[in-house]
Image: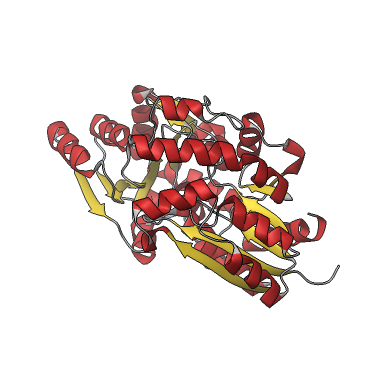
Amino acid sequence: MTDPRVLVLHNRYRVEGGEERAVSLHLDALASAGVVHELFERRSSDVGPARAAAALIRGGAGDEGIAAAVRSMRASVAHAHNTLPLIGARGLAAAREAGAKVALTLHNVRLFCATGLGERDGGPCTRCRGRNSLPGLVLNCRRSLPQAVAYATALSVHHPTVLASVDRFVTPSAWAADRVAFLGLPRERVQVIPHALPADAFAERSRAHEGAYALVLSRLSPEKGVDDAISACAAAGVPLRVAGDGPERGRLEALAARTGSEVELLGRVSPERVQDLLGEAAAVLVPSHCHEFSPYSALEAMAQGVPVVATAMGGLPELIGAGSCVPLHDGNAFAARLAALWKDPRRRESEGEELIARARANHSQERFTRDLLRLYRDG
């Protein structure tokens, strides 16, 4: 097979997060491997709610530009990340019709779920499966009836086009692959390619034994369970810093004040500041209420040798090890594991060293690039 030529497709979110990180690292890996590639990007922030809803229902905001981009660079592969609402199923179909094989990386369950989280009432939800998006409409999971109607319509109507247009679906964990198969994708068309970090993201050694606080790196939304982290830190007597922003910030500030614990909400911080925070952290907390596919917050902590305390949700046990996870809604277990780490600096250092080795083995850029090229060759 000739060397691949890759068009990367992505619809940037209004509030950027882990998927933008994944796209950036994907592009870095292609560049490092000398693969000819281009990025075709649309931004949700460029359109208002009405235009976004219209594009969602139509299956994209127009496919002409995508087909032209495939032909212009003679792309052999179109590899998409987020597609909603402005790329959509029609964009995937256009890329395939223009002559490219199509891969779609799934970072969540947005192919089936109106929120993409697969979460409802503080726990996992699988009511919407295959083309059946009606439960999300009936329950108004978007908390907006017009949005609920738009998503329910789009997810159901365009599901067959997605299945017909995508040659290979990609997930960052085996758990995620099994989950999307359970929800309606052919498992034989789902390939696991774990997330990766560049070489300079890995610490030479763990400094967690010197750590001065627990750290949360997260969007501040209900499904992330940040209130559980605040409660656990209060119970364990551990200072907490929270990097991130979102609709829950006011409520979390009030909770921190009520508990009387030492909590500092830092707001949204730069990637450089994240590295600084990790360098001084004793533990990173991932108290998620939804099934995380493979969160970068945990992976970046691993690479820096910082122990992770997480709920046993989704791909987290696969990523960091089942022994580092506690059951959902078991606040006592979460606080006890955190307290045990806080009181034992040598344990923190030992766990941190093990996590660095685990991250190097499973999440190097070299391994990621090798898996990508195999996908492009065999897909």
